[in-house]
Length: 126
Image 1 (cartoon, rainbow, N blue to C red):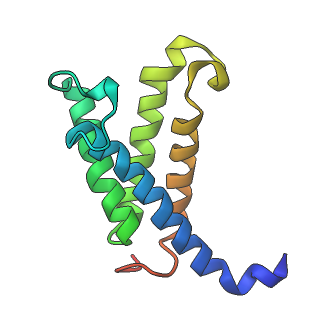
Image 2 (image 1 turned 135 degrees about the horizontal axis):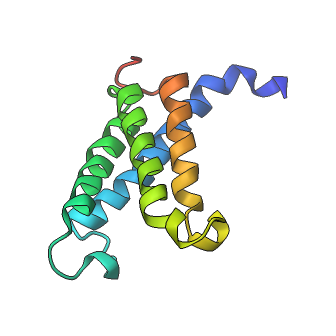
């Protein structure tokens, strides 16, 4: 689809922003209780969940802004890979049955963003 070639950097930038904001939302749900997710609404978070919330909040913001996005995306990718193998994989081998599809998608999209760079609309292109 060569007609999209001239928009590649823009599409990459928009994808980075959307994925970063969606990931940021996971962090705000865990740490700021917005939006309210019943799973995170009761009592303090366990330490591993607290660390993941911080990575989601800070990493998602950095990726969305395009500020040190390669490093942030690489860290977010690793977090999602670890999350998959800790929280989902033990329940079942198949991602469709263990609820881990989103973790896998995030891991690979962030890995791609770390390799490809931020595209356009980024605060810095590093």
